[in-house]
Length: 148
Image 1 (cartoon, helix red, strand yellow):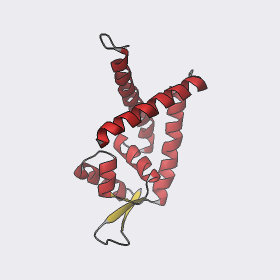
Image 2: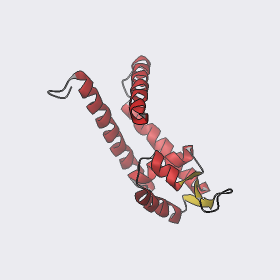
Image 3: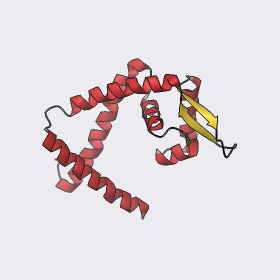
Image 4: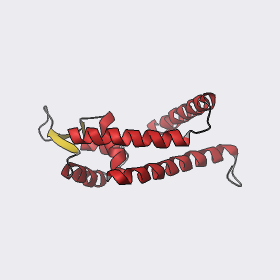
């Protein structure tokens, strides 16, 4: 527990720190793939939400449109994603994984799984289920605050 903090505040700090160190570990295993930290997360997110507009992605990823646009530009130049004109609104472009992007996402998922397996070493199924339950409740409570 962080010195001087209540257990509740320590829990929040620990959630943040676990997330930070996890991202750092995944960034490290992505280097051989030539994928940066921001890129692996965007590619993974697009793989789960293929066909979103760049504006929708920026909102959902809590990123600025300009910052996301730069990452999308680089991913498009490397052939990992494609922008396609929306069938209904031709002014809008939708972001899709390319075939190469899908292949890279599979590599990302394997590397991420390896990191996650290492992170969960020594944690029982019961402990994991309790942690998942607590974090799901925490997420719902925080989303209620965000939604107002």
